[in-house]
Every structure is written in C-alpha cells, then in structure tokens.
Image 1 (cartoon, helix red, strand yellow):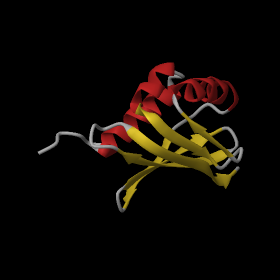
Image 2: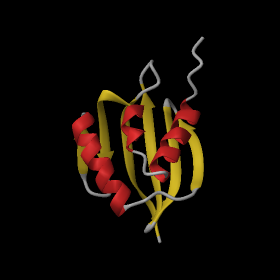
Image 3: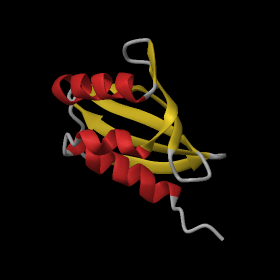
Length: 109
C-alpha cells in the first residue's frame, strides 16, 4: 500500500508556490507537462518549468487556498491570485510526481 497522499502533494505545491520556492519543480516528473490556460502555453521538461516558474512567481503570486477537491484521478486546487481565483488540476505518477498540471483563471476579480 502506497503512503502517497495526492491531496497533501497538491498542498505542498501550493505552499511552494506561495513561498516562491523554485524547488517547486522537484514536485514534477522529468517529462511533466504544465498547461497554462492563462497564457495559452504548454511547458514540458525541467528547464522550461524553471523558466516558467520564475516568471509566475514574479507576475502571478499565489495567495490563500480557496478549495481542494478531487475529480476522478485528478486533484484540483483553487487559490487566490492577484486577478481572481485560479484552479490547477494535477495528475501524478506512481512515484508521487506531477506528470500533468493544467491551470487557469477560474473567477476573475
């Protein structure tokens, strides 16, 4: 039985995001894809994630948790950003690493 907690991992992701901690990329698998619906871009791989996260930390810092739920095999987290509420959904591999993340603005302010 696995001790991996996907909801806990999503909260770890939000904590790292809120702290602007670049180690957030350690939560992703090496070939993970980040789909950003805010900018209409898709990012794959650690080097691209590093660049993407540096930009996000500066332009769109995360605030308080708004909701944490599941949707099938995905974990969905909603959180405050300067221009409203954003939602991110996560799929994890068997090692507890994010293999796919899709994010986008849920409710504009």
